[in-house]
Structures are given as C-alpha cells and as structure tokens.
Image 1 (cartoon, rainbow, N blue to C red):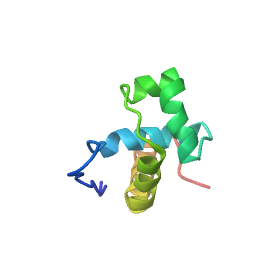
Image 2: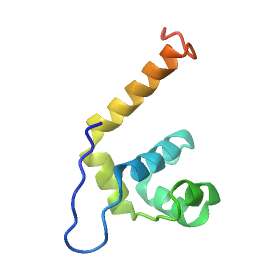
Image 3: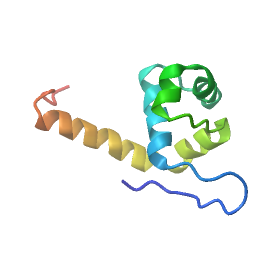
Length: 94
C-alpha cells in the first residue's frame, strides 16, 4: 500500500504499519484524533488493547506514522470505498 517503515537500529523495535493503521482507523471512527489520546487508549481501553494485541506505541510513533504516510493512508480509504462499491454496500454517489 506504500507505507514507509523506518528500520530502527537503535531503541525500541519498529511497529508494523498494519498495527498503527488499525489504531489510526479506531481513532478516526471514535473521534479520537490526538496522538496523545490514542496513546492513552492503548493502555486503558480494552477494545484497543485487544485490537493491537497489547502493543502500546507512544504518541511520537503515532504522530510520525500519520506524518510519514498520508498518501498510503488515503490509498487505504480509497480502496475501502472501492470494495464497498463492488459489494454494492454503497452506490458511490454524493
């Protein structure tokens, strides 16, 4: 899909883009836009803990993912709409 993965040679292991995308979509659907608020959700919200399998990326990681992958994120949303049109879940008209 075009996500960039920074291979961190120092420090913590790199999070897979699929995990960060799941967190981003969760935040989008639940109106949690702040990276700091999303980080809090990874510690206290059982849905997010389950969704990320216990991973807890910090707010900088979440923010950097958004900043570094705007085209890939947009691409995912467009593909989602294409799938919904294919299965006639939406008609595609404004």
